[in-house]
Length: 387
Image (cartoon, rainbow, N blue to C red; front, side, top):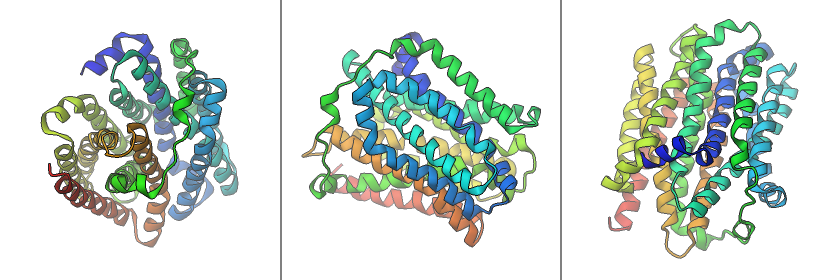
């Protein structure tokens, strides 16, 4: 809890952490209106999946450009401008009149989202090194907290907005105003350019990280799938018509993930990384089983359990990647994080196609199988490391 205390008591740490929260406030609000966008354009799950894939393409396109932008204007300025542009751009998909323009708009949203994500993580990393503190895990907890704010509060007030754009605009104004209140504490931070170059990845680098990258791909892929499809699951499978209630699957997921990330460091010190990953997977398997029960209360509780189980896995993967033999900690973490983020982006469209074949129920069964697979991979890695 020391990292959380640092963030809450010092503006220097709260400012960057709030960018994490801001990013997911916008995404959490957007998630609430995915069913309405789908209905307005009369598209099916597979077509929606392609639209979300355009978001993923935009993100991938920005990855090789982001370091150049950060080098040129500085990590602090990039972080602030990126979250502002990202917020404004997410208004555009809400008003697109055709399916094609929706796909194009999501591509540009993906560009700005990726730049924001890379910049804010680089910013926190630089602050950690300069101040010799550890706030990365708690900062990611703020990302989850942003989902609770965006989807949770948004679900409670959604019925008061006849026009979805009005609700989204309120979220955008809130994010920009709050960031304007704190951005000065990090705006002038330049970043360390020399640490952003000469990061080449060969099979020699990949080999000791292969198992970790697969786990990251599957877990973050499941996170992305739940973020985009949980509300539709409650509407289409559990048959919940209420706009307020159908958003609470993602709210429960985000709330428990936030709690888990704020407490995860202390649990990790006691039990170790491999035990935490395996334990988290078992909790998530129980959660997916509850989700598949397709009963309102049990399903929402299931989403919460999945969030709690997943919350501790990604931070532990980063810890293990940073200790991998033969490569630097920066290479290990960035490599695993890159594959995980790829899974986060690709899983929503993949599940959309699975839903087209059968139903969203099949999609969530696939997520359950993916979590079981992670347990087997982790057992293998633990045995190989002799732990």
